[in-house]
Length: 324
Image (cartoon, rainbow, N blue to C red; front, side, top):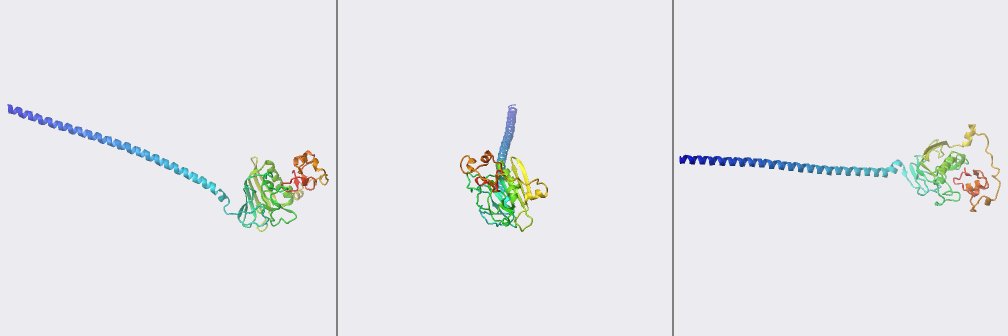
């Protein structure tokens, strides 16, 4: 009996020990699985954070690249603006008072006095074909060195053709509008057209407006040999209005007469050849008569070159009349 009891106790002991080992093994497996899950979760979170960080880095790098490209492209556009404008032409520098009538072919020249930028272009035949200016800035005789006649230079370039009795050394952009007097701003222009016609009218309108913008002159020739234009086209903006003036290089009076548009000959002023006391007109006594002073004294405009007051007045564009 005692021996059977001992066997029973031993059996129970063995069962108990096996059960404990099983529990420990189960517990260990559960713990290991929990730790593995925790590590996996931690790794997942770490990978996600690294992915986010990398994404942010990539995003920042992309933004930086786009900005740099935009800035470079903007600078290239700015730097190439004149290059694109002058493409096919050689940029050369010519003194504003150069009296030579020769022009180099396929060149672009700045014909603006001082800091003005007025660009003149020639074709392969040395003909002046185009003049452009972003802004026309009027002459300022209070700050710029001009002659008593209101000119920057005492003479103009001798372009072939100006030796004619009926052709003037016509400025594309007049002195009063800031243009120089070399061959890249001068064409042989019909005298009446230059002094009293469409050319003079255009210049006067720009002066009255205080300047112009987006100025372009296109000059046309009858052939490739002559330097005498056949026609002009001017496009410019005055006070927000785009103006286009197109006219032939001919005497407008003769054209009007041939068209029957001339009703009568202009009446000569009875005062033209008379003399008078300039002091009665020159109210400030400076020896120079202004348009307003002449008007105040009862004189009508324009004052022509044969009028006794003309020598005391400034004819800025040299067209033989003041106050037109």
